[in-house]
Image (cartoon, rainbow, N blue to C red):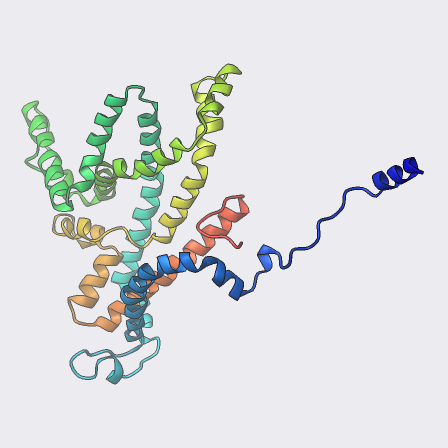
Length: 329
């Protein structure tokens, strides 16, 4: 009888624990509030800052749809003109030129600047000596803290008509060159300035990502006979891939924002044909002329395009199996 009871207990299989209530993913908003209220309180000050300095000023974008005059009617008294400002934008040849220059510079820098911080981080990570690594990091980080005025002044002293390069060429019997006023090579000059100034600082993110890779993976690969390049290809780059995808998405969303000060300082040297970008167009056509509704329409167009680019790039990242900027829980 005891053996039969034992066989019956074994055949019954493992018992299922009783249900404890609602599943964590199906909690009501009240239950989530009771669970997460400390985190919400911690984020409340930053939320107030975002509301005060981002969301409330964003309501001012309504002037893009008005014949706005700050001295007579203001926002409440200016007449609504619909999409007239946007229609005028696309009829303006300067706007089309600014968009073309901006997208060309963004595409060029995605190819020739975006990989530079990654390669620099890999090189810094390969330095064995801690003191030498700290010294090199300090040298490559330092230009980030220079203003664009100082950066362009340094490049002027190096590559201008009276700069070091031109004088060296003249002393050796060649004709001097002035790269600072050549509109045909302006995009190369811009990218060189950006690499010299920002590449070191941009490498910090990738160095942080490299520090999260398990060193045991490299040891196991070395034991299996993998050389340095194989370890980098199969361990390092896959470890950096989520960060690379994230920064690439953010850069695509910021495609119409290539800077302002860098272009304004060199506009007189190369001319507006080469240096007119989206931000300088908004300044010259909107702020300088006092047509704030026209400038707001251009700024709103820039924000909408950036949002669409981020959404599209994020969906591509999801299709490739990456998390991207955001994902549904």
